[in-house]
Image (cartoon, rainbow, N blue to C red; front, top):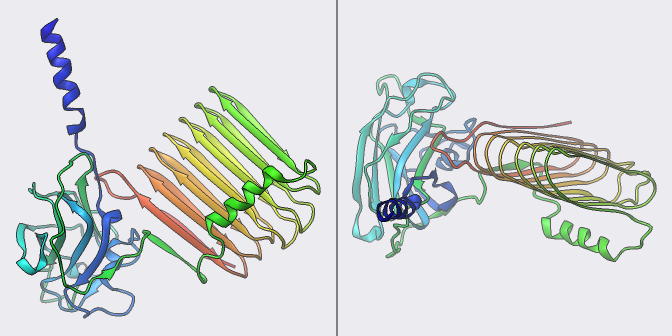
Length: 385
């Protein structure tokens, strides 16, 4: 019995020691490229935007690179690259990585490695291990050589994905830097026409206001427990519509339809789902341009699918957070008024498709923290009339 107890104790004491490699990008605060010898739109920040369709190109060609500043000291353990869209001869053929906690005190060489990136374009490389046990706040990566220096006029790379072990508590103290750091954007990719038109707190306040509204409004509150259930909610008519739906269970199918009959109606959905293999289908239709329609969605666990369609000529807002693995997300915002989608994803893999169409403002913000050494899955965003 004592031997069994000792084995169990030893097993429990090492549970947290299992490596969980995640991307370093959310911890990056700033950067300084080795030079500004890059064409417009192809600066170094593109190598960390989560979008393989953009790239970092530097006409220095040899020893081009960048310095990075983190929010806290971390041990970089792996790195992965994504090739750019053209000219394989420009691909890096080696990299050197340096670390520092005090840039005025110099840099420590962590590793220098030859790499063989795929000749296929927009291809993800193997993961290159980095023999490193020291945490640094500042890192500096350079690419000393390219595949064919004679034929290439520059160095280019679409994505650089540093990985660290989330279960490794090793950290370090920032001892200082006087370098002119440029601030990283807070999300992996965002864009559209103009800036965000309606922030989440403003929409949340509108949802909260439903609790004090007249009972003539259509309000549905459902708290579901269990598996293999089917829920369908249809809200129509001339009243304001609000759905608050919470589910804890697996293999449930939920369908919510909200249809406005006049241009003064407000339609909102507040949805929380915990469990696996759930299917959620949401449809919000607007009569004419009028008050905002919004969906606030939080889904956890694995193998869940979300289909959200917001159609018509009113303003639409979608705030979506999903964690866990093997997610499917399909979002359509369609109509002549303003559209905004704010999506936060963690876990891998994911299949995300976002379409925004209309004659006015369309804006999206996507933050994808893919917790795997395999890199981020593709994200499809389409905007147009």
